[in-house]
Each structure stands twice: as C-alpha cells, then as structure tokens.
Image (cartoon, rainbow, N blue to C red; front, top):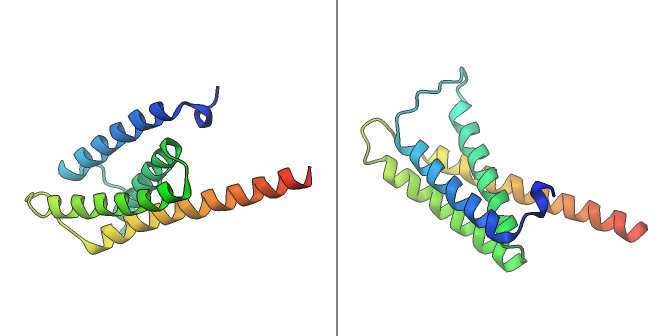
Length: 124
C-alpha cells in the first residue's frame, strides 16, 4: 500500500493534523532560521503545497478542488490576521502570496500529472 492509495478518511485525518501543525507554527516564535531572505516564503509555499496535496487526496472532484483552493487561501488569510495579534509575529501580504503559490503549484503539477497519465493510458 502506497501513500497515494490510502482511504480518504486517512487523508482527512492527516489534513486536519497538518492544519493544526501549520497554525501552531504560524503562531509560535520562528526559531528555525534558514539563511535566506526567501526562506519564510519557501516555508509558506511548502506548507500550503502539502495542505493542498492532503486536501486533494481527501476529496477529488473538480468542484472540490476549486472549493479547496479557496478554503486554503482563506486559511492563509486567517493565519495572517491571527499573526497580527501576536507581538512575536508579523502579518504580510507576501506570505499570503507565498501560500497562494504553494496552492497553485500543487494544482498545476497535479493537473500536469493527470494529463500525462491519461495520455499514457490512452496510448497503451
């Protein structure tokens, strides 16, 4: 059994666990410093890429994909609003943009994967 063939309810559990972890990491002081001016944006994009993957595996129709993208973007907005209330964190539109990049990058790669897989299956 591979990670891609788990039942949807497992992906839901993984997704909600990841949401809690991302929210926690967004609120606590950032003690992990990667020497790069883009490190924070990479963390945001990576987190939302993973959230997109888990949520996509938990629900798979196109309508759900569009809804999920919007919900994840709103979650990113929620995180930025919450961060504005904590003295050790700061809110940033650039972080929200990085979240959107992670979401869109997953969707692009997933769509490309499906397109290539369908072409291969059609030619077989």
